[in-house]
Amino acid sequence: MKKLIILSVLLISVCCSEENATPTAPLTTNNDFDPSMATLIKSGTLVGVGHTVSGTAALYESAGKKVVLLDPFSSQNGPDLKVYLSKDQNASQYISLGKLKTTTGKQSYEVPGNPDVTDYDFVLIWCEQFSVLFGKAELL
Amino acid sequence: MIRTLLFALIGFLYAGLACAQSSTTQNSINLGLAFGASQGSLSAAFAHDWYLGKKKKFILGTGGRFTAYVAQNQYYETAPAKLTSGGTGLGVLFEETITANIDTFLISSPNVYAINAFINLGYQFSEKFSVGFNIDAIGFSFGGEKQGNYINGSQGQLTTATPTSFNLLLISDNDLGSLNSELYGKYKINEQWSIRAGVQFLFTEYTTKTEVQQFPEPNDRFRNKSLMIMIGASFKLK
Image (cartoon, rainbow over all chains, first blue to last red; front, top):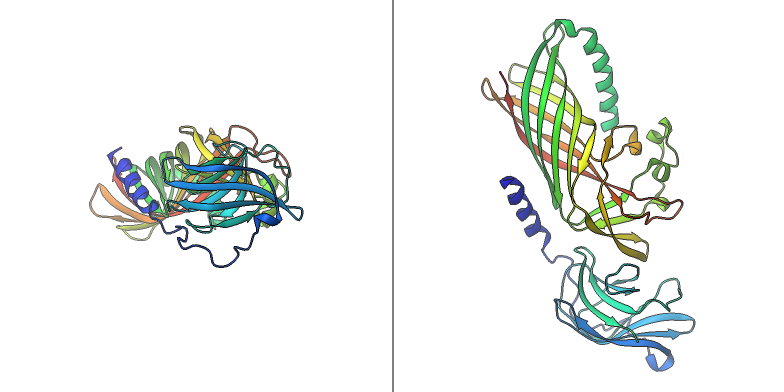
């Protein structure tokens, strides 16, 4: 059992390195989503959950596509951070919008497949590798 | 390669049983520690080996093995052969994996315990050095319920899963549950102790609480295949 504990500690220490960390600089490209040209569906305030996350998340429809906009936005860094559009804050059913592009500044994410988003009321900043919620916004 | 070795092992089993009357036997306790990327295992086994042939160089054995697997952030993939290979017959050995049917279940901290009967095959090159291969055949697994992230393209959901209870060695992805195997070299350092080193190929399997995968048909079984470096010791029982 002692060996098992030592092995576990070693594994965790190796795994917790932040080699998959998100870029921290504001985006200078792919940042051209203009909310004034889109229809706001719902939005909410981002709050951290055990981590420092702040800003506003909003879901827009533009030219038949749905887009999640984080603006303003700031998040504590972490490994393998993803943006989820979720039915609840536990990610019990979600659509992954991809890797978090940066920890600071305006950024937009197209919702793949243009699904019915009526029941998707949460934007989550989610560490996929460790299944840890960093931040959430309830969209109203 | 594992399968080829298994077939060779079965062949040796038949050959070995035919000349078992002229064999000598040895009981031993084998301990193993295996480690790979963000994962590791501990194993403890009781082994009963027959030394066969005129010069007693061929080793055929069986026994029971306990394996404890711990890891971080492991991706488990769709397990049933019907989905991974499109069938369940002997032909699955030669089928390409159908990647469109493979979904992923990410578990942050998988922890599986398995107790299995195993079979062992070896060859004694000299008084001190031998090589061998063993593989679990049948047994059971246990472990706590874990939360995991079922990922199907951009869609996903969090759900819980437990280790698949029943373990059975079959053909290719028809295998059920968690099965350990080792390819190793063994060096005798004194009359009772030997050291072992080699590679461990460990399957672990979780069953999700619900059938989270729906395409092309409902599925709740997800498997992880771990290739790890193994070191260990063997204690000869009197």
